[in-house]
Length: 579
Picture (cartoon, rainbow, N blue to C red):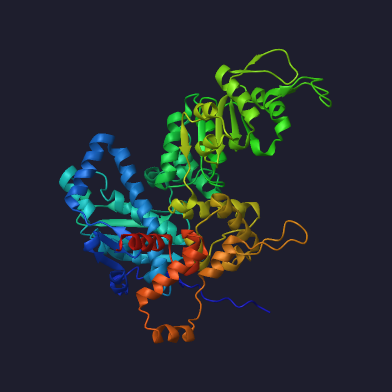
């Protein structure tokens, strides 16, 4: 029996109005207009759950001029492009929420129309050739009355390069999040170049012959191209994009700050301490720091401190002389000795015992190690990188971590933000993992359904990048050849670890279950009406009950109510300010 395939929730729209742009049925602005709320009494403007600020376009032009003068053209353009990219990626949830029942063109048009509502630019579609199931994206747009480009002309004049830096970043970020893969817009005509309008082409990164021309401004996948003596060709970069060799993937502000700090410290020998929740990618970034350092031609030795028993820590780190204890039948080098000339990465350093911390501190102070059972001191030349998901300052106050060691390690701390604060990175990571696991499991052209993508973009990711990686691999394995990964492929129960214990529910499956729309209970509705509750009182009671049930955990309360963290936080703030 042939499986019945239901239409894609957003449908497909291919080669729409290539020869007749006027036939585009541009959706009404009314649903987006309704999402804008003005509250001057509290100095707030909201677009759905995004707080907005009205600003003068002339001031944006002045800011661009100041940035160019202070940073230079390339760095200023990259900064404004990245800001636009992250804003665009963060606002895709408006389209997924407000136009979830619309067709593909109407849903996607929310991005250009939000731009128009903000007074940024009027967007005219020329070509819209898109198939989400196949990951195909090709569009052409005219931009009319671009505020950014007009300000660019006023303050920087007409030149040989386009001026819509932040707007192009927004378009690329919004579309990358909407499609679940890297999409690049290129402005080939611009009023800042003397044209009467701006003209843009948008395609997936893999379909551009020279994607690095734009990727360099976003510093997404292109950032992981490390400095080398040999200049890389665009074809090399394109091939890497196609086969998914990147391990450093991202475009968010937090991600770029972390990489900027890595670049700053890489060529020194200063110890580095990576901080962040479990699963944010601390070891991957430690590897990247090593590869960017002057020690890149030597080894990086990684040690999971939590996996070493206290009785063996000294032997593992510093080595053992033959006969030092029963079973020591040969001399064995420790991790410090094996990493000589290179880098030693100590993960979960907060789990070391106080005795082990004292021995580590001595090595950092003197640069000398001594094997267990040995009598000779040995000089070591190692660059130390440590990582922890613990609050070491709190551990110092609690007496479980040495204060002197903390200060030795905390010379150059780098905080890695959690994935829920790196919204712009999610579509890039999804695409990266799809390519990696498609290759690993011998599957071709694996894509995501709209419902699956929506869930991945709105989930809080308590397990961070590691959780996203595992869920994507699960989906690639379960999806049928030639069909997109659907929501039921991503969510499944986790079997019990111990025989006889209760089955543990996958947090992602729980999120999906709680996110489903339920049929309203009319009996409850009648009771509320009979008791005279207003809609505001109903919402207030629902949110307060959710916070009580979740012990004031905002993320859990948001999942229980089907609201966002921003909505819950706004409600809490509002309650505190009321008399």
